[in-house]
Amino acid sequence: MRCCNEETFGPIASIIKFSTEKEVLAMANDTRFGLAGYFFSNDVAQCWRVAEQLEVGMVGINECLSIISAPEAPFGG
Image 1 (tube, one colour):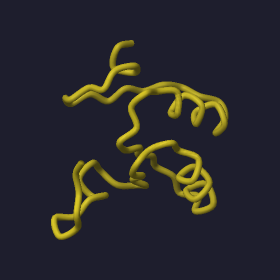
Image 2 (cartoon, rainbow, N blue to C red):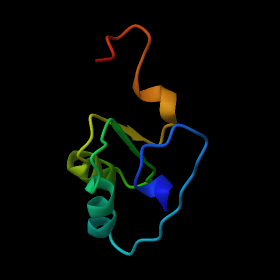
Image 3 (cartoon, rainbow, N blue to C red):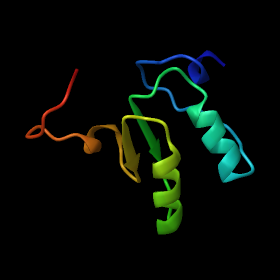
Image 4 (spheres, one colour):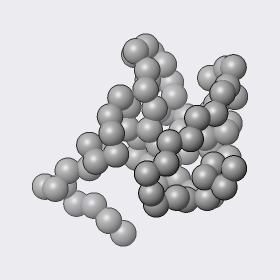
């Protein structure tokens, strides 16, 4: 699907099945885009493990898009 291979600016939620954490990390990191990555988990150890392995600039864990930056902090490029 195009929404899984292109940077989409719009209200899209793509759902892709996976079997292992290793498999989903490979899919998440197989892109030329990488400004931010987001995921949800109840396992604190998994949060650290996945966050450290995502090849992105910012990681949001159990948060929505606007939470990982703050108006009082420098941001942009």
